[in-house]
Image 1 (tube, rainbow, N blue to C red):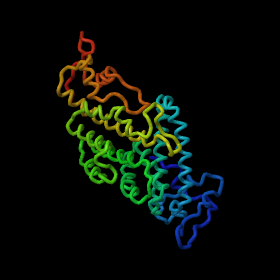
Image 2 (image 1 turned 180 degrees about the vertical axis):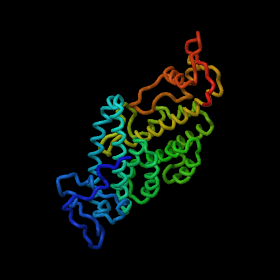
Image 3 (image 1 turned 135 degrees about the horizontal axis):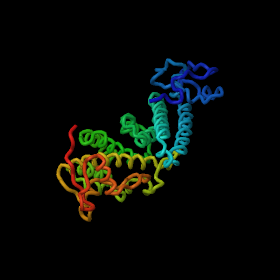
Image 4 (image 1 turned 120 degrees about the vertical axis):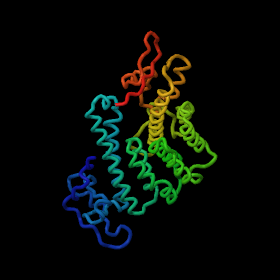
Length: 353
């Protein structure tokens, strides 16, 4: 993973020494320090954890004003990323090198947010700004597929930061469901971690009874019982819509402005999509071991499509037909077309290498 924007570099020349006075902000660099020079000083601000306060201006991100300016700096990076890669997603998919650049940009944005969280945590800040920074970090870590960062954010956000910050907590239900879905995905097929999270979050964060509680526990139960047809129904667009901030559409996505953006929805849908892929792999293994022949006609095809949870949950994803998916398994050596019988496939034995 590359270092973001010269994060290990020394502060710009001409920066004033940090103060030695007492009180809040004592020993912290003034935000004016980061406006000096011709370079973008925020790119060189030191990480609290790496400097341990020993590097020059190493405590700058403990300063509330610096945190807020740094957050604006991250927003500029995020907005540029979204314009460059997401609004032109078709081009990104066609260019392998462009996809690598996109992934590198995602990682760098997450690193910037991690540095900001370190400053917030070290300064013991628990106001609305702190909550928004942690929530946005969580949503982006899921959207950018960084489960390690997701776990790190959740450990501070739920329940500690919510309990220490004043309401309103607009995204608390979304964050709660995202936390539980994350535990299902990273530990699949085990649900031990999920059960531990559920005990920790009920009833303060997830009321019982409630639609959200019924849904997430039913989802987990369908996975435990290997009832993948029910699982597909619980993760369908019609069911998911009741837990989203805005209706599902192909415009559901991320913006550089966290207020009113689609980040919570996109993060939740992303985790559901990951879980469906995990369940699909398990279902396919079971089907291969149970059937010698599969039919894509009528009832058989409908049952197979539901069992595999093929319809996409992410609005920008292209729907794949059952026949297209089976052709992919043919390339994998899992099935082969039955001669003289269109729409029927012979299941091949798993090859052991």
